[in-house]
Length: 263
Image (cartoon, rainbow, N blue to C red):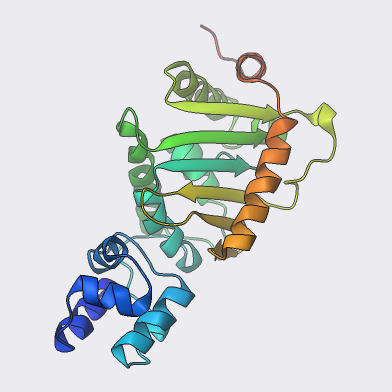
């Protein structure tokens, strides 16, 4: 396994003779945040990295690029690490089901159509990583997860009718167990504030919230407080136009039956 950002930070801090608390005070951060970064549980924002560089009198940390040991797109790696520490995750799916809510068959269908084409071995690695992410839901309480879905997500036949029926009912069952809350934005609504792309909002116990937006072969983490507040407000505005939970689940069940699902 390659050197991580956390390894570099710990080495630089110890070389400077500083405790985590001392470095936190110098960089205007919390000790807990420093501890999470050194343990590899958090990826610092660019602003945090610059403050750490200044505190440690180095220019290495803000340009450090960790080596990956899992199969994900480069632009998603930081978001994946943040996802593991979030206590509240609010997802918006425009074209497909968000990753942490996907079934194996659905994930395989989504991941198999990328460009350039992936080999069978690479595809298996991607699927395994995707399924590892879904284990966040093994904990019955944390993180709290909301999923706001455009009706297109259910109508687009990914992997075939059987795969779609299984995927939709997976969401229904998660909602019925009160593990996830799912809300639908129906076709009849027309335009809505989140039509430009997917969005994930993440909240943490001891750190400011972040947002992650993704498009074709690109993704961006937003940690500027003003930007995050704007994206949260956009999400809330769209959520206000969504169908209530009970009606959302009824629509999902009806579409699953259209795909051939039978109780």
